[in-house]
Each structure stands twice: as C-alpha cells, then as structure tokens.
Length: 238
Length: 238
Image (cartoon, rainbow over all chains, first blue to last red; front, side, top):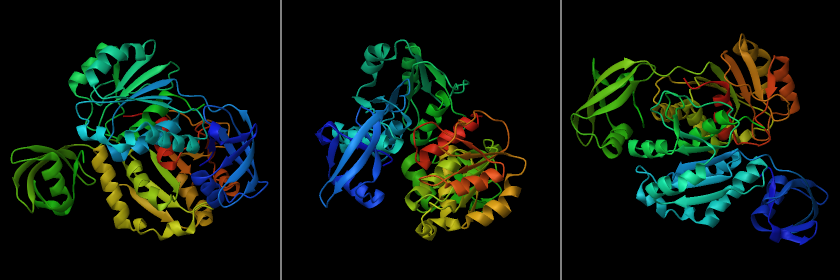
C-alpha cells in the first residue's frame, strides 16, 4: 500500500476521513503511523495528496487530508483480454491496474475453459478489490472499468468496431513476423489471447476489424508476464 | 509446460528417453499424448526439438527424440536483484528465467528483511526447480546461474567491478530524471532494489561503480511487474 485509497464515504468532514478495517490495520501494522505522522493518500477517481494522522485508536484512524496532485496519466489503451484462469485472474487484474490500464474487457475465446466463467472473483465487487490493490501499489486513483463479455463472436462483430474506432488495433499473436512496436503515441486497442493463444478463426475475426498481429519474440510468456512486456514496449513511462 | 525439459540422465539410448513423475503426469494429463504423438522437447543447456511417444505406461513414458534447433538467444544481461520476500521469490525467479535472464545475483540490501535469507526456497535445488518451470514455459533450455550474496558492501566493492566490467551499468531507481532506455544493444548489468528501493548509501555505492539510475515512470511496481517492464524496454524481442 504505497497510497491509502480513500472512498467518498470515508469523509467525516470537508478534509477529515475515518478509516477502519484493512486500511486501519495497514496503517497501524505496516506504517506504524502515530498522531502527527503523514501518509500518502488519494481519493478514488480524484487527486493524490497527504493525510496527517489526527488520532488512532483500536477501531479507527482519523486523518486530515490535503489532495492537491493529479494521479499519473492513464495509458491511452483499451485492453481486451481473454479471461485468464481463476488463479491468474486476480494477479492479472492487479498488474493491469498497476500498469495504468483503465478500460479492460474480459472476453471469451475458444481456449478459455467454460468453468473459468464460474469464478467468484468475477463479481464486480471482487474485481474492484483487485483494482484497489493495484491502485494502492502504483500510487494511482483512477479506477479501471472492467467489462465481461461471455460470447466472442457477437463481441467481435457487433461491439468491437465501436470500441476500437479511431485507435491503433493490435493483437498479440506469436505466429507473425511483426514484432511489437515501441513507444507508439496513439490511442490503442490491444487484444491478448488465452493460454495457447487465439485460434485462427478468432485471429481472422480480429483482422477483419483491422487488428494487426504482433509478436513478443520466440519465448512463450504467461499472461501475467506478457502484459507488462507488451504495455511497457507500447507506451513510454511518463 | 510448452516444452518438456530433458536431463542427461533421462537418456536410455542415443535418441531415447524415459520420463517419470511430474513430466509423465503432465504428458498423460495435460498433453494426453499417446503412442505416435509428438511433443516439443529440449535438453538442458542443449538443443530444442521433438519427441515421439514410443510407449506410455502408468509409471513411465518413453520418447524418441530429435534435437536440431538452438534455444532462443539469452538476454545480454547480468541481473542483480535485492532478495525478494519468500512468496515473491519463486515467481520472480520463474519470470526472470522465462524472460531470458541467464545470470542472476540475489543480494542483500538494507530493506531486505533478514528473515528472507532463511527461506527454504533459496536452496540451489529449489531455485533450480523454479528455473525449470520458467524454461518449460518459455520454450528455452539454457539454465540460468543464480548466485547468492548475503552482504551488500563486499559484493558492491569487491565483486561488482569485475561482474559489471565492460557492460552498461543501470540501477532501477524511482528518484531520478532519466527514464529507462529502450532497445540498447549492449551487454548490460542491471540492479533492481527491494520493496521500498535501495537506500541512498546503496545507490551511491552503485554509482561509484559507474551505475546510472533509471526510472520507470511515476507508478511504483512490484518486482514481479517491474522486471518484465525493465527487460522488455531494454531489449528487443528476438
């Protein structure tokens, strides 16, 4: 928790918040913050700043906060990701959030096992928990939007044209000669397949929508490794 | 397991191997390979090729192998990493291996908790298990070398000059104006600090040895995310 993420409901006055539960425990046990100490805080979808500890008791901590700095810029990206297996899902959402992804479609694909869609971690409140962890890690406040699409074909044919309109369209696909471009400045829509990749039919559907295939070299990477690799090649650190 | 990694001791003849245990289970349960099927195989520190299933029983599988292709090129890199916390260590070693790291120093730093050095996962055979998983994932055969150094100062003063000689020397450090360079062709020595970063004394010691500080932008990333970000910016996919 490199930043304590505040929710509007935490405010007890114009510049004071009261925190309990997980955030209190972290402030008490990891920061070991006492009255007068200051912590880095940020308001969900708002500014970043500092919070001075006014009082800490066993059941809550109150802070006086001053929020004056914008969060880091978002990536100019819409990420379309074949739903990862449940044990990867949490980490992948956390990593994507920490890297600055703000719009994420989790979609079906032929090689996504049907059972993955049963994961309790797909509930919006559970996904949001992972986003919170990613924002707290990366010192960011802008909450990603995560959209689930359980059918590939209607998504690719009916929704994708509008989603990807006026953006550079890329699909990560090992079987191509074009390597992933570096430091592109444009708005981008990036599709990343499941373990084993998109099947040829799916790649064709994406190509019909103007997606170019790009590869990451001969090594086959897990989605949790491939994602930081792709995003850090596409976009410079700012 | 995108590649079945073979050890010299698996060979029962010039071009036949017998596999049991974990690899047998994977071939039976994930590949579901029967007599006549072929699998991608590679010999530790040797070539990659194919293995045809000759026979599969409950306790072993025999393959006829043909190894004709070189593994992907290694990164021109020596990675110096402050020892991660035990729950991150396994994944970090796997990720670094999958990304093509072949020489990895795990070192002490002020913000590495002493208890981390007690982890049973630091035994050479346990580290090698994680490297095997990384090679199997990335379709590679070249086993990384992992060296442990429990004292920062003698490492930085006495060993590092020779380790980093004739290489570009970089230290990932958030507090600097220089962003991480892209697609450098040179042999590189890269130092990555612990959670919370290297302390100023440690950064100075590295700078005395010619290390330049580079940052990854305003977001603070976990080592498991920062590592793919750094390596994919420094080196093009080949």
